[in-house]
Length: 411
Ligand SMILES: *Cc1c(COP(=O)(O)O)cnc(C)c1O
Image (tube, rainbow, N blue to C red; front, side, top):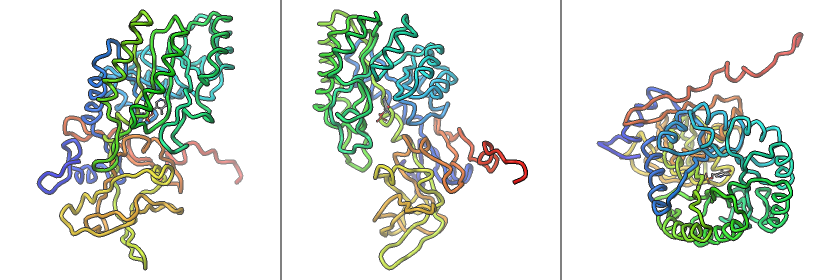
């Protein structure tokens, strides 16, 4: 968001005008930021011959966003058959979609096979069942290297007690299954979890996957997942993607030399590609002074953006309506009947009733985790393309809320 002649802009579009046109609360995504992040990633790994970025679409699954990534040449990482279907609807080639489910039944995996997408399997029992049902279909295997990334167990998925992946210690067992069933393993995958900012930790996990890869002769790709962190605050900590690209790219090329073939290097970032592209604009309903704090109560809550309450995530907040007002300290809270805090002790330009506040880093896992709790409508979504704002999801209505309810006769 940039301040230009006293007005805040997102991707060149005036933020307050967006609210006037589409109402609040509203999610706004700047397509140019998504493109910038995608290109940062491809140029960071420019030293690798075959590179594929699969956008982890659970972060933001609007069809128009998927199409932005398809046009950039991205593939898609999907975790449900519904995401697979949306990827196909958005025009992705099935071969460019990787299905990486966890704890789904074989039937859902078979549906994905029928649609022609690539399959990633994260459990030996399912691998055996898969081999029996689809003996001719090549698969990828998700390995858990047991590297602890980040400090929060809600977002770390590679540690010893994680439900994700086949333990690296079970590779000998996997090899027996592969050989007995004559499976074709086309890829190895790992995803150690969100929030990796230490290239050395990442490279340790990479080494573990590479040592396993040497035992699989039919590989076409290695997928190192994601976990790339973006800054949430000015000067905040972030993955140094350029440094990682240089080091990992060199190591990967060396491995390909020893392996005897140029494998494809894959990543599946979600947050890195879309987090910074999104802003969540909300309207201030009340300003309430209590004995200890000043609360700015807004027309939204954890039903629309659960990350602060769920992950203790920090979303920077700006008063878009009063860029030059004197600053005061606020607790920004929602209207849900629960403790429902967006930010504590935030210094904001004076907030008045009706002011529009913008929450940053609202592109990833924000709208997608929204619910109808308290029977509230989910917000609209807007995408800014070449400086123009376009509605890409309308706000819900009472019909949407009631659409799936079945009323019993005589009640
Ligand atoms: C969620 C997820 C990702 C994306 O993670 P980010 O932290 O958003 O980059 C990648 N791969 C898999 C398998 C995932 O489940």
